[in-house]
Length: 101
Image (cartoon, rainbow, N blue to C red):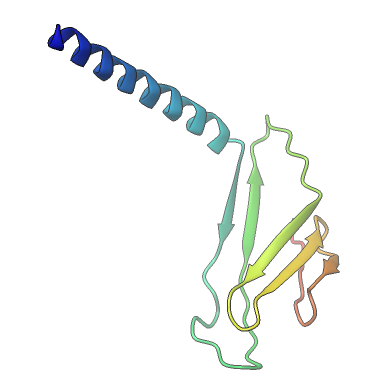
């Protein structure tokens, strides 16, 4: 009896694992977000920092992106919100966004 229960538990865990992997694999392929290395990884106040980031959407996917949020940790924390063309919506004082593609 214990062997039967153990095999059911193992089968259940295996099924949940496979389903989880399939769900994660399906959603992960729609788009990818990349943030390149910063020009200065240890900035001080008033230093200019540049970075190139990209959002790549697979050609067979449709993703409705209306705005992009760029958060900065620190004191104070900041949240820059801009549209898909790089136009600032809020919180982007001193930040320049340039769309390249």
